[in-house]
Length: 232
Length: 227
Image (cartoon, rainbow over all chains, first blue to last red; front, side, top):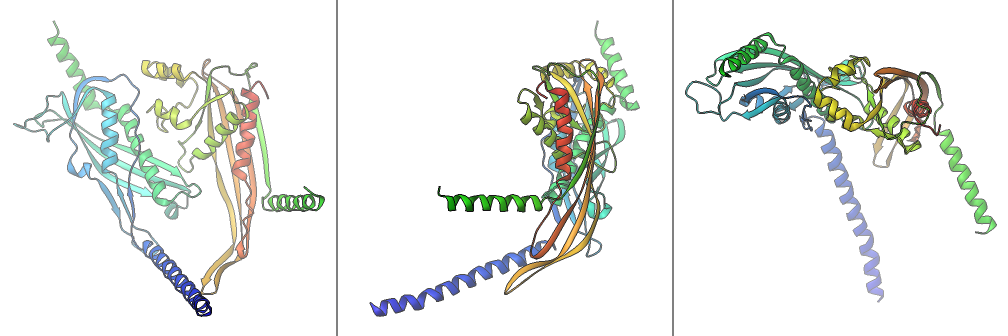
């Protein structure tokens, strides 16, 4: 009995020491991981829900072709000084999600093309095909601007072509989104929110400007004239 | 409960109340209002929506502030249906985005010319649209605070202080008459402190919360038959 008790008295402190050493190692690992994580780039995969536009759909049968650069669009900005932080912002998935919802609500018929429009290419029959491209993306965070808002600015280049790939119109459009800093909101969450706002703004700008773009306006007039001529 | 237990309970309660009172920074606030055509019998079955203005380049009306005002109104008068900002903006996308939002009550007529928009507005049954414009800014900050960790433990030492100022203006639009029927503005300012001797003790001035309560109470006086 005495020996058993003695054994317990000896083993208990050594277990505690081993347990405490283990805890210290875990804490040290966590601290090292925390500090090393500051060395990597801030990565944002933009995610958001995009509402359907509430409007009378335009009487057009429109197709969309997303080039690979658009579908997989990402913006990279590597830090130039040790004080700066590097950023990788992937907008591709969110772009496709937003434009799919927007165009489906904006036009009477909307399809995603099977392949890029061109001569002799088997594709769906549509009035025209829209090809969006992202020309430029810029961002600003409070550590750069000393203003407590996160900003994303994008410039799109749109091409409207017929099913043979012949150009009908080409125009540029900008979009801007910002979000204020908030308690316990990380930089990455705020940049994501600003990107979602910029995408929503892109949708709003597209709805407002599509019919007013001179080349589109002329094309729409020609389309309606042709349909009137066909209708007896 | 015997008298000694009751005595210690009272002492602990008093101590906690004193600590809570000390740990809250002071806030100065003022509210101004001009209202016309106040509804005398409340707003009935209709709903209201509170929206933040987001068209300025150097600030953004915080969504949390808009939510705070809406929650305050809905909590104080259960009869008032407050449509959430995001729900309203999503259901009328893209007509209430910063780029497209109406800036004057007369712009509502332009929106209602589109049948899908008019139908959705009818479905939401919004009687009052309240636009809130403003933000809470950090006005000053000073002091320094250093924290350290070592084998024997960790701790902080120092003193920091900062000031915040809130400026908000709420404009009330009567949706039926397409007219502005009221304007409420509130300003609040306060100084927060953070002394640290081993443990940092934040003494936070609830500047934005005070501005939220101020503007929401004035809106309640306008909208609610109970106030």
